[in-house]
Image 1: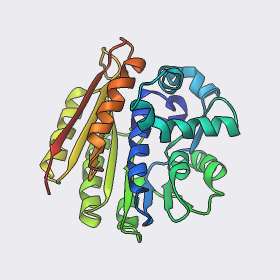
Image 2: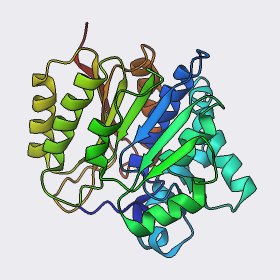
Image 3: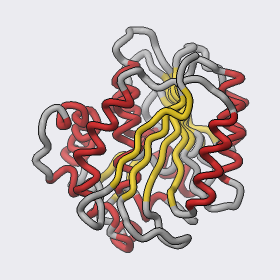
Image 4: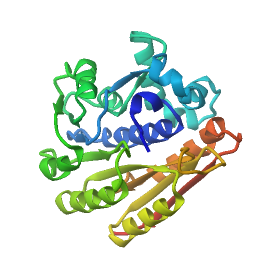
Amino acid sequence: MNYRHAFHAGNPADVMKHAALARVLTYFAKKDNAYRVVDTHAGAGIYDLGGTSALKTGEADEGIERVLAADLPEPVAALLAPYLDTVRTLRQSSSPRRYPGSPALALALGRPQDRFLFCELHGEERQKLEKNVGDDHRAKIMNQNGWQAVGAHLPPRERRGVLLIDPPFEEPGEFHRLVEALKSAYERFATGTVMLWYPIKDLQAVDAFRRDVARLGLPKTLKVEIDFAEVRSLTQLSGSGLIIVNPPFTLADEMRTILTAINPLMARDGKGRVRVSWLTQGG
């Protein structure tokens, strides 16, 4: 699967991932202590949904555009406000079709004391990232393989933080790399929050991945998944998942509330399916 982000920015998978990231960072900001975000596959930071790449797929029209246009009930609107307000603010300040990737979203929700490390190995994407968020003194952009960042930058100096691993799934073995990265991250930073994104296409591969994560036996491991298409094949994305280790204690209920409300808006059959459950608890 090629998940070059300019083609897919703002799609249902992005909405689900960024809604979760916004809730996690909102929770972290409740304490005055600084935190750090490490984003291993940062991408360009900001995307033009009116550009050639995004218009070629039209996926944002099924994702963020439908959610922004919806009359969302409370408390869904309140839970989504940090995320959706960031999108609206970006559009007011630049153009009506801009969309914040994870780096821009994290920076928008961060505070002066927080720090952000963004890794991007692809030269063209990294240049765009530098242009889009490089002027922010809180951000450091690394020309580094994202998988190596786990060992190189954990634990953070702040001893509070979020590790986001969102690989493009352009090469074989990405599920295995996710499991190994999670194991390494936990060994280095057991109290940190780790978020792993994965596509739902090959159900056998996803099932094996879930089992491999569960076998690690890490406490407080949450699974959040959505299906936004009925037909599953190896050539079409039909769903999106997150594994989150050490999530805020409120996150499971919040994501269940959010996704139950918005996934039917994005699903191709008008229904959508949501699965939020614990792979492991306790600790």
